[in-house]
Amino acid sequence: AQSVTQLGSHVSVSEGALVLLRCNYSSSVPPYLFWYVQYPNQGLQLLLKYTSAATLVKGINGFEAEFKKSETSFHLTKPSAHMSDAAEYFCAVTINNNDMRFGAGTRLTVKP
Amino acid sequence: NAGVMQNPRHLVRRRGQEARLRCSPMKGHSHVYWYRQLPEEGLKFMVYLQKENIIDESGMPKERFSAEFPKEGPSILRIQQVVRGDSAAYFCASSLGQGSTEQYFGPGTRLTVT
Image (cartoon, rainbow over all chains, first blue to last red; front, side, top):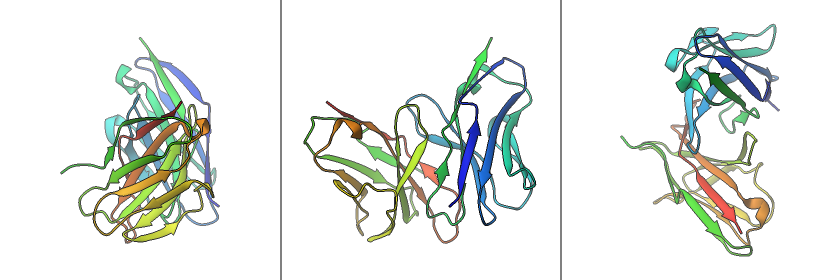
């Protein structure tokens, strides 16, 4: 079955610094990969998704992620962190859209 | 164009009572998914439904939990005889289906069992 692993349950960066949130996947067939953001007491909002069209995917709020098959990774990056980026981020994988498997989440803190 | 609606947003039940969580998918979406999020954890898949059909319930606990998505009306996640361990946030998502890979999430229902 497909799965994702998020490395680092908490990441802290300074405002203006690079954001890097790590996600590695496991799948026996080509996967679809997603990054979602969750603000406190809210549902999940899709940041971006990979569906095999292009390996570098650009999402909302300046985030992007690169699919690297050789490394089975789909890390999320943003060049310059903003205070409003503080939230919980989830990586997810599906192969047939029957069910989506989520990582445990990474809580991003942005320091002024 | 309303998004995925869930109600209630917060639900408090005593042990042994029943909890009913409702989810109205986005307009035009015929596929619904339920997930559970325990404190400090990610989302865990529970069940995938289409109108009047359960497609995949591999993530549902074998007892006390059931889900339906009738021809008319919202999808319902029902938890009978709730226990403290059922306290969690329950999220519903919907999709167009037919090969669509994108799921849209509702704001969740936070269930507290006292």
